[in-house]
Image (cartoon, rainbow, N blue to C red; front, side, top):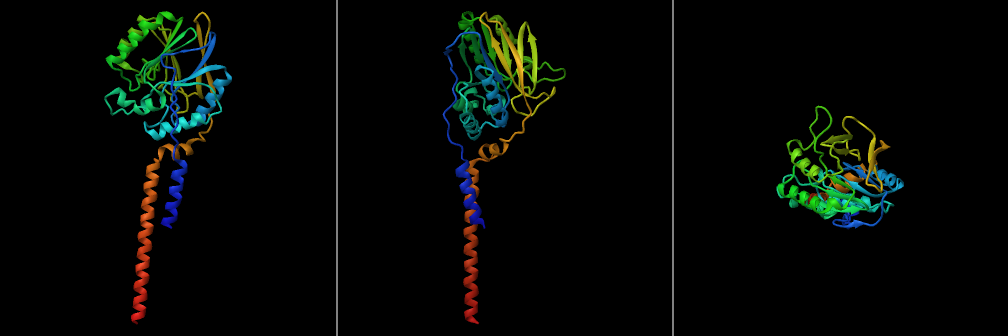
Length: 319
């Protein structure tokens, strides 16, 4: 019995072992070809719900989005297996929609002090934790505040990037995981005391809007004249105000003006959860170790039975 179970577990581990997928890299430091007007989609906090993410990708593609920007919490735990599972999910989609990302607090190893070490699994899958790219008349700057903090070096990078590039574009979006503040009364899932210093840099460079996630709902805010759009309805557990799963579709015009629209996709059952549990939550190495342990137990049990059989035969002969 143990030996049979070991064979089944070993086969399961080999079949379910996530294949190493090519990283899904953004156009860091590049200008995407094409003119305005154009549309792009924004989603956040999908984590272990590939069902919702698939629907969002399909809907965004139908909306004519030029690309999809994921603002973090792409995985539930920062492990290689989970990032491989997401890459496998994305590569399995029948879609040519480009996928760009920003790190969230679930995407990093929070116990690491060095931001580069902290984001090592994320960077292996989705590229640099901070970068800029441009599309038509828009500048996009991805800023890493994934653990509701940022370093002085990171803020200096943001300041220098905006100083060097902002004037060349009609519109500028700064994209991050944690919003500067939580606009819901009585809640505090924002940057808190770190927000004013960041907002001073954004205001200094006339940033058009901030796009953020982290709060698992949809909300809008405005700080010092800068609109803040929060979208965290990509598949994780929802918080007040509880809304259907959603993403944001942003339309940019030729003069640089833009509009955002919340696009609801309903509340589909997460049919991808079982696959996630096997492919990401249960490490393949653990399955193989369990298979080996069961095989060893089966072998010892077989040896024990053989010894008892020989002993019984000897006693019978002696009688």
